[in-house]
Length: 144
Image (cartoon, rainbow, N blue to C red; front, side, top):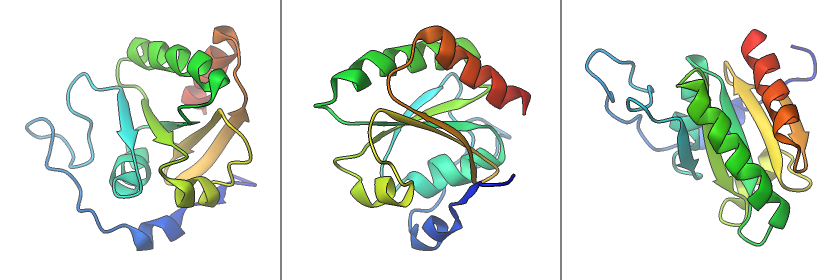
């Protein structure tokens, strides 16, 4: 995809091995049954975002505790992830605690939402958006 951000440089820095399979017969990077929202950090970014995006789209929610618009958007994204039933994963990243990843993702402001598919950044938006707009973003991601 034109303009996609190559996140492969983060792969070289990752040291955490992939977690064991969540379900019998499931791929090593599969989310445990029923899990649609996860917290990620620098140690888990490779396995939980990059590797997992090879199987299912991963939507990154970049947030900080002090960010009021983040507190409006996050519950909307969590609701949509639950409704999605595992068709995509919401990965929440605290930018204050994970500044190197936020910089690698070129996060200029928060809240920021970035979709990763097949290890590539494929879509994004910044700012708190209404549920309808967030729903459209997810629908477009799943149709791509």
